[in-house]
Image (cartoon, rainbow, N blue to C red; front, side, top):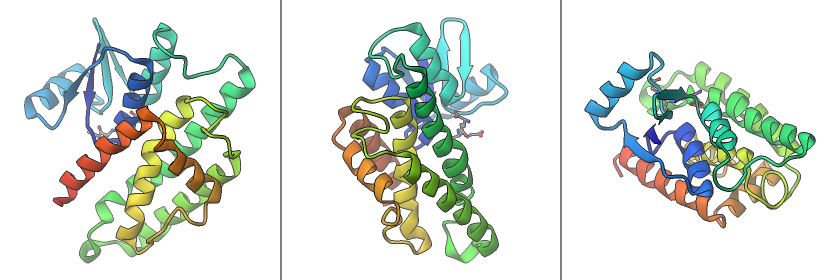
Length: 213
Ligand SMILES: N[C@@H](CCC(=O)N[C@@H](CS)C(=O)NCC(=O)O)C(=O)O
């Protein structure tokens, strides 16, 4: 398999954690390369990363890719058998993706204070904080998002929380995780997981490159 990838993309990071945890043989194709980017655009009108290639199949969307990995049945399972636990994992991932990451995406264009739209920032921040509150409620203090093993929820949440923590100081919030006690202790513990720590280190390098530091 091959996957069109950006090291800084939280959606690509989600799939990389799944790939590392499952020990899958997936070649990562960097869209920082213009030729690779053009290749991706020719394969799917969505031309977003991540996009997975498996033989003749072109599979965009991080959630769909993770589910595809699971259903192929290779490597460690990232969804338990119990339907209630599966629902809980998917709920946590969805809160992160829809209610935290989506509004947080609007903040990337607002990093420069000179060109910042204050109303847009206030609206997006309000939504992000509301979503973070929901996460804080649903995380139950387990070692991982649910229970004591890595799941799809961790794959989704860890890259999102990386951005939440790193973007805070750019908007005047030095310790953005502090009000979210459950989320903060969960996120800190994820650095002890080899696969999450690997993706976090990759995102750290990519963010420094992006910021020119
Ligand atoms: N819902 C998608 C979001 C993917 C996405 O927005 N990727 C961004 C990078 S973080 C991208 O490829 N943007 C390029 C574009 O939209 O053309 C997923 O879960 O994979």
